[in-house]
Length: 199
Image 1: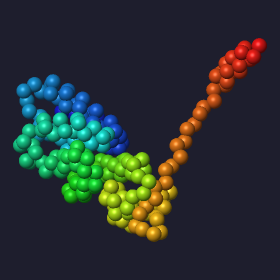
Image 2 (image 1 turned 45 degrees about the vertical axis):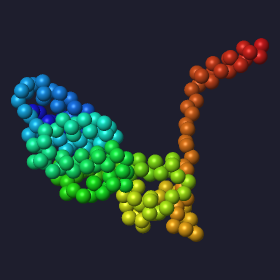
Image 3 (image 1 turned 135 degrees about the vertical axis):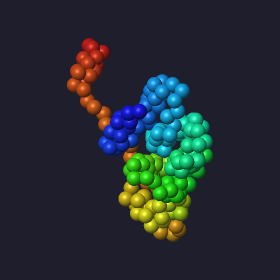
Image 4 (image 1 turned 90 degrees about the horizontal axis):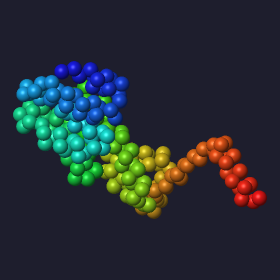
């Protein structure tokens, strides 16, 4: 089976495309190799992590269920990838970072895991930003997968403030920037319309 599209996507760090590439390759492989098992060479860990990277836990869950038990027993990295998916599936957000750090990832998968960890931290920050007006430093550190000092430093850079009277962080909502593009043709039509109404 030709994995060059997958290899190219990994090399170019196009992690958002990998789940679709894996899905297409799997369908193509299943059609070409009718009756011939290809599970031994299939990159299940990458496939699972790719679905997790694009926040598609449903697809990751169905992929996990389709993986043969023998593969799960022989490839601990596949099981470790699914542990991340399990934490997401059960909405145990703080445990996601623990699942990431609990396994010594292979050199091929490590960049994908690191990229997911970064994206996930940003997602959790946005979740905290929308859900809280104040939050404890300890809870913030749990959600962001950092120690308390690093979490405090991270959110201070984002404009949050430490409450001087308690170990709490005051969440500062960032103003929503909306850019309105002014199209000269639209302005001309509006001017003509207003002129028409006045006369």
